[in-house]
Image 1 (cartoon, protein in one colour):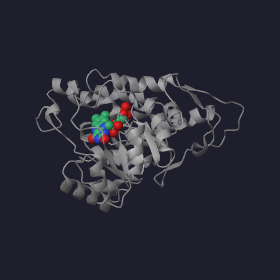
Image 2: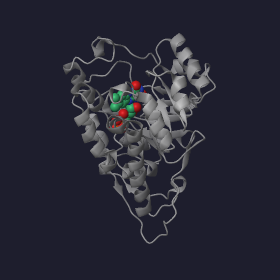
Image 3: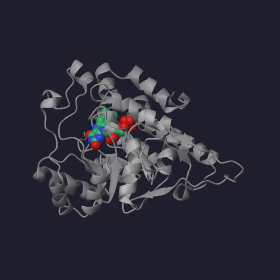
Length: 342
Ligand SMILES: Cc1cc2nc3c(=O)[nH]c(=O)nc-3n(C[C@H](O)[C@H](O)[C@H](O)COP(=O)(O)O)c2cc1C
């Protein structure tokens, strides 16, 4: 059944058929008019590949490292809450799917299974995503994650308040035990709290949702090990730039000092190549792994990742490249007005 899906969009259609409307809308939705959700896609389509032919591309190496961990490709699973809405096995299925594809999963803060069980089911690297609020709770969560074998802490920075997903309100769907989402102040993370967090753990800290040069400078100064440029898939603030458009600014500001990744809108292997060509070390997927989960549990997640891998492999071959760690410059053309490209 799962095998007949030929692109991520087939998984999307299957997930929409399978899931109850409230769960589907929770996963698919974005903030307000969902302009950023659309812009995340449009930005990838607006960047053009510049293929190079007549090269020997029979051998291609897609492997890379993420903070030192070897992965089979520069594509990872971004953190996503409430994965059990898509499949009863939730994060346990996702971690098996990511492991089968030999890549990283970022485990969300709120999981049904204990972090130790998720880690025990992992065959690839895992990081832990923290929604920081109360210091005591964060210290406990991070200690448990470190103990379980998570290799980094990813802090989601972009959500001082819960987002305005109006689809959820129409279904009276709440992530927060019945409270209207916009009344909930979720995370109290600030630059000062980052200093505190650094004192709590030996693990490297990755900041998710840093999309500007000034934020990137602060991240480097604060000792962060990586940045995920992200709009949370357009789920937080509407009418922002897409994450992909923000990538060159962050890459330039960071100047190679720490790793930069991007998520939000990645649906095609060519998107992966475009992101790498603009300086990302790897890309994350959010909604597509939920679609895989809904369609086929762990196998579905693995299949989504394998489809993206196959497309990415073809894209690098068409562009005359043989190693993701040594891509040549000028593989893409960005639209005028995108600002400086590193
Ligand atoms: C249903 C859902 C739940 C999410 N929950 C979280 C979360 O708890 N923490 C977080 O940092 N990001 C969360 N995200 C955002 C993802 O990590 C990621 O940034 C985003 O989905 C990427 O965009 P894409 O869905 O277009 O691939 C969530 C995304 C979805 C779709």
